[in-house]
Amino acid sequence: MRIKKNDNAYLQDLKIDICSDNDIYFQELALLFDKQRFLDLLPSIRRTYKIIKLFSLEDFEEEVDSYEKECFLENIKVKIDLSKYTKITEIKESFPEFYDFIKTSNVLPETLEAECDLICYEFNRPPYFLEPIKQAIFCGAVNDSFFQPTQATTVDFSVISAWPTLERIAIFVSPTSTYEDVEEEFRKAKEMMKTDKRLSYYKPRTNTVPNVRKYRHWYWEQIKGKNGKTLEQIANEWANAHQDQEDNTTYIEVLKGIKSYKKLLTS
Image (cartoon, rainbow, N blue to C red; front, top):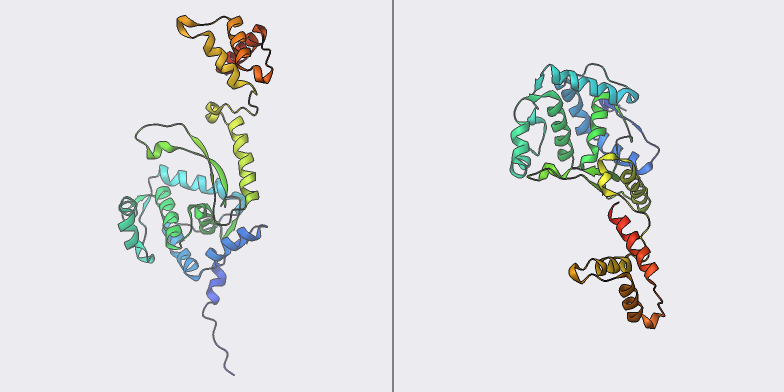
């Protein structure tokens, strides 16, 4: 019996190691990085970006950062080989500015970022695959350190606005996100509001003053222009209006309530 030659044996040299204890993440990563079309792209991509020796996953962030800075300082420019991709016409029609960028030579770090975006588009994957794609290119291995289908992060809306805006917290979700994932990222978002100096304007308050509506009413009754009322008047009117609740508000309570509200206004 004649043994059929395994024409895909060469893929073994291109195989991407996947390091993740999360079964859902492992599957999502494997179903991209085991695609023959993706693996066939790797040698060409590595030649384009002059990657001779692969980095370890542990050194990925530091080494790639150093590599990109060096390329930027030396003004190394490269051009993406668009012939490798099948969706260029779609991109040209749907994202003309992006197409104009990727069809010309650009500084290497920017081109690399754009090509990773292009790969996401080519293989119908969302943007959170971008860093794992870089890991696959530079390391021949990926982990889930940068794979975040569910993520609490700050969003700078000034990039889509005509003027600078304050950053906001957003939680990004994906089809694989679970309630537990979102809950965990929600906790992270709350902590970021407390600790990130860039988000100090959030001034989070974990407790609502139970009587804030009443205190606000008293506050405005006292400063009502020329018709501002005394503490005694405010207390008596409030008590009369809430007789059905057996409210015996005194001017001392009004004084404390207004002070409490003023303190809130200064926070």
